[in-house]
Length: 149
Image 1: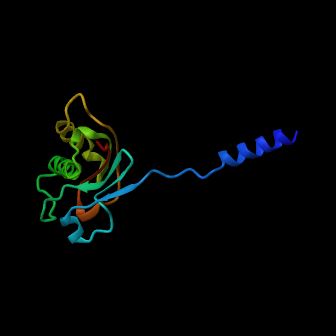
Image 2: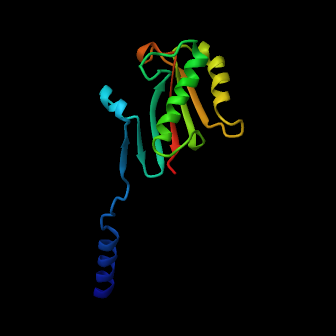
Image 3: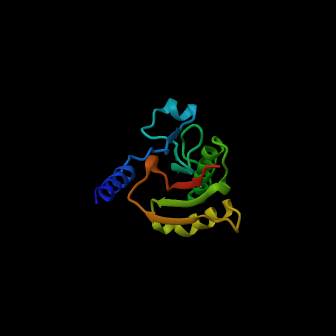
């Protein structure tokens, strides 16, 4: 009986050892992003997943691209692509997007532009919803999840 108790105690103790956490978080920020002192990272990488922060249709000078929802959608996606390229990725690594619209009435035009950015057989899963306002008066903001290769 003592042997069974000791064996049980050993098994419980051995199984309750704290597992080492091999996960790490990497923060991705370009020099330009750091200089602007935004309160967020452009992306974070946890294990094999890249979490890209919401991107609006802003140009390098921080102005919103002109031309309406279609142009803003494409520019937002180009901004995401730029973040992914900075870590050796591409738009083909994206598997999920979340699109936030200023007005849900822009959904058809946003969807049409969005669809042209990706290969027709590699469209990521997507959610879209309208909010009451986006940064800098943008019409759309897009965030995504991608595989880190």
